[in-house]
Image (cartoon, rainbow over all chains, first blue to last red; front, side):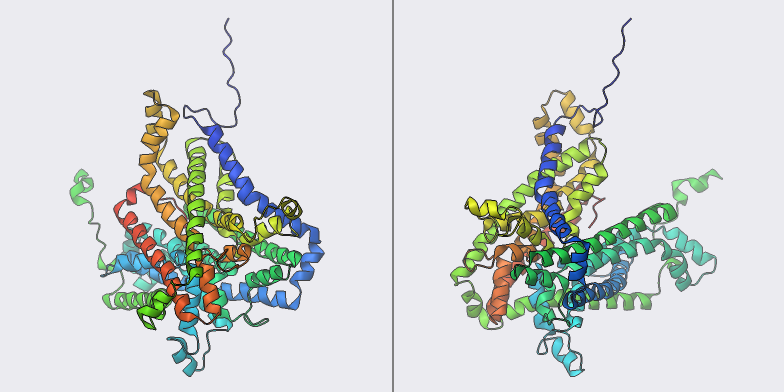
Length: 284
Length: 293
């Protein structure tokens, strides 16, 4: 009696396609050396400080103020970016008008434009003698070198995230549902707020979280327009740079750890939103 | 009865007026959206070019007569010439392993590859300072052996590779997953070697997606500011990339030169956007659909 050999349990499902070992090994090696090892170095440095050490850095008035500005202004900017991003996504998918494709392509400009270039351009536009800054200054609103400037820069870099997360979902809405709602006597406004909007909320929240996370970490497009006054318009990433230039590696690592911790929580929130959305609406 | 379901009775795709806003509302919304984008996106780009040429073409060209400017351009090209091919090879390997095979912890691996996108640029630079800085983990070893990583080309390349790490992989993984294994399996059954199948079957299938990701990867590699700023040390004519050179000129109140050099990067961004849009319009079917921005 010939015994059929039991298939060996392998890490990957057997396949005729070759090259798993080398491509998987190379991927892990690069990932380990370039991404994981350096990030582990940060964790090691921060754990050397201990929780009390990190807390001490976080409650230093200047650090606390920078963290408050980074997170507070970024939340506000992400809110505005989400609102206008939704409007832009709606207009681009639902309406046909000349130049639509051009406008659609322009949305990605903040992805493509180097942050330092965006930074000096925004600073010169919103400076008290700038093209936009001068009329605003006459109205008594100073943008550059205040938190308002930080807000403007954060809206700029957050906008594409807000548009591009909602846009594909607006395109996929079944128009017949809207027609049904209208035939059943709902006004257009009621159809929009009670039929169209609710399933889009998870995507809007995801866009908000992405724009928020990007704004918190952003450096290049902000430092020129912010003016970087301690306690007024100094952002957390800049404080890391300052700590490094003072060779205070521990302080820099502590601020970085706090920022990483909060962006980790943001990522977690995005995943929870998407899991909830999958359960509630059947898609991400 | 049954002819209700015949194609002739399928409702037209064009939605009736009940499923859209009125013409006036539509115009107002389009107006607000375009005004907002013009103010927030187009105006800064416009400002770069007007400022660059504000003192005439002569002053613009003067910015490029400086040897420091050429050193910065050369360094940026060198960094991109190393970082982009590195990420292409990594992206090809990662997408081959992840898209062509089934194994556990795949989702975790994709998340880890995406990780650099959620790390602040400054932190991306900081982690290399913590490793290779004079007080860093390997600092003593590097000093004893006379190896310079920080404030030199290797550090700048490492930081650039880190921030552009996910670009190629995250475009190619969903693209290869959509395309499946059937064509490669057919080639292998017909006697092609693995490498031959990769070159003649896989590569032609993913070429537009690959080009798309290389474009974006290159734009970020040449324009990266925060991470490079932390590891470069700002040594003029030696470790300054184009964005860092722009920063120095701007902080010296040399605005015309700063915007002249910046216009070079802005032009690169515009070319990238145009090529990217052309690829999206022309080869939409051959780019990844499940791509997350």
